[in-house]
Image 1 (cartoon, helix red, strand yellow):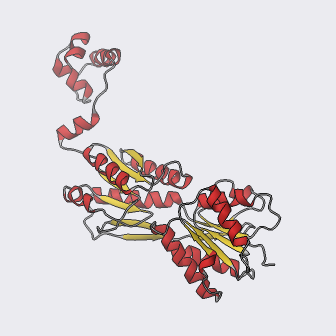
Image 2 (spheres, rainbow, N blue to C red; image 1 turned 90 degrees about the horizontal axis):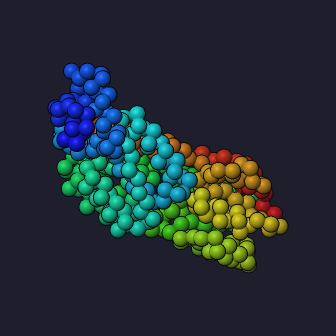
Image 3 (cartoon, rainbow, N blue to C red; image 1 turned 30 degrees about the vertical axis):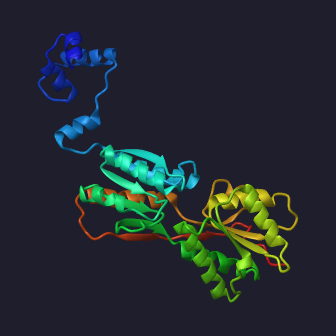
Length: 328
């Protein structure tokens, strides 16, 4: 401020009035002060200014599994839109399914005094957030619940979605339906496996361990899994894939194959409707997930002191072709 005042030929008080948008400064003087600020390359530290006034920092933190995943990109965009309407900026980081990284990011955001925190958890231990919550930082978990704290949570109907996927394939005559899921340590993967089991029971087709392949998947492991399912004495004629990345890996593995199983994927993805055949999916709205979580967070920031809520958003089956192939 001293440098700006000297360059503009005004008092420090005048500089303060200009940068804080206070009345009582002649427009020509204000323009001179702003020109001096630009010339010197100075920027206001809004977080410091707000903390000095005892108000918010104007930011919220968002911890995701992987911001490169199109699903989480949709979540981020929705959170940003809600935050922008409320005059906040969003700080985002990827945990890469590492609980230690999740904790590091969450506490780093809290040390920056974010107004609130949104977390897609990687682990099951979240007691580290209790001091922050007691200090007044609201926390909302999304896509997966917290492990050992009771907080606002927004989920999708993982069980109901895979029940519907199995029922849809069974309606086309499939009795050997396989499931390719992510690591069962992940809440969504475990819930979708539970829905698969329930779907098999409801369809009266039984549950067979040989038709289930769980674990972190890349293209090679999915290719091997599909080959193993094909080579069984009684091979799988249909597959439910547990998330969008597994679905894409499966489609690459099956490309050019003359004997392709029927397929229903959990999570929609871009261009799924343009492939041959178009991909049948269990779809849910990533934007709705992000919006619901952000709305809960801002309700807490506005003073909502009601008990923690658990919101489960619906899913829907989108039949496009790959899941309607009849059993041979």
